[in-house]
Image 1: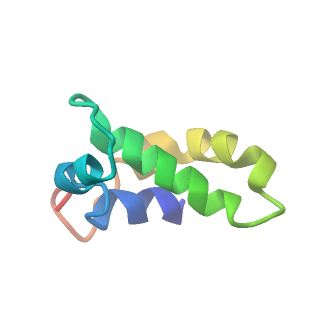
Image 2: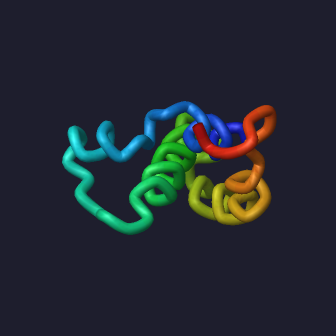
Image 3: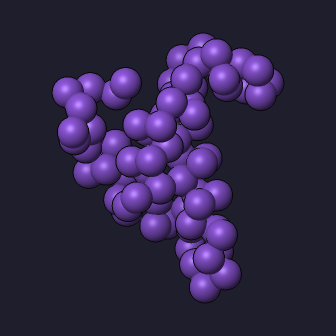
Length: 74
């Protein structure tokens, strides 16, 4: 799912950015942010809005590990 990869690799979920947004979780904040942003991306399509969480959950394990073309999350 493009939304998961995009949120994971874009830098939008960097700790400093999340802190400025008021999201103060110390542990797991990156993954919380990636999930939130991916669900918002899927919800932008009115035909998928009701199933956004399920779609992200289904693709999560594969997509969160996919960092190509990088060796790790930048």
